Length: 179
Image 1 (cartoon, rainbow, N blue to C red):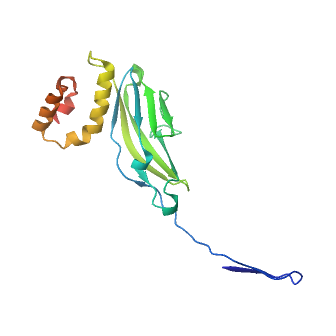
Image 2 (cartoon, rainbow, N blue to C red):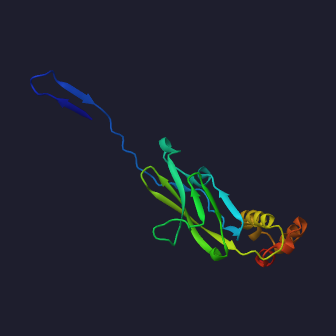
């Protein structure tokens, strides 16, 4: 494109420039997030790497996006009062007996043009049902929630052998042993 400025008094000035129009594509979700579990009266934290969850398809702006979490059902969309939502991809909290529930969350990736890409997942706050070290049980449930996808596709006999070998079969919810 070229612009010519001529006011018949000063010397003629012309400007040549190029305009490049780039389509703004929304972020691409790279994977689904697992359902998460936490135990009442135990601190929990879940760390997520935004680059492992979302990808910016625009070559020039690969790192230019933000990520946050929100509750799907709340208006305005926030997280429940007992959960802290950090901008580095961390959910941290401490649930009480009043908070026992399953919450539907959205992991939201926002690009430089404010396009939102949303991934849904659930956070379940469970009551303590066993008399074992609650921190160990909480860590065990968090580990199993990450392995749940693999356990769902494992044959029942292999699943029971693996859990018995780990020595955790008697501490697990029934759904891990029979589904």
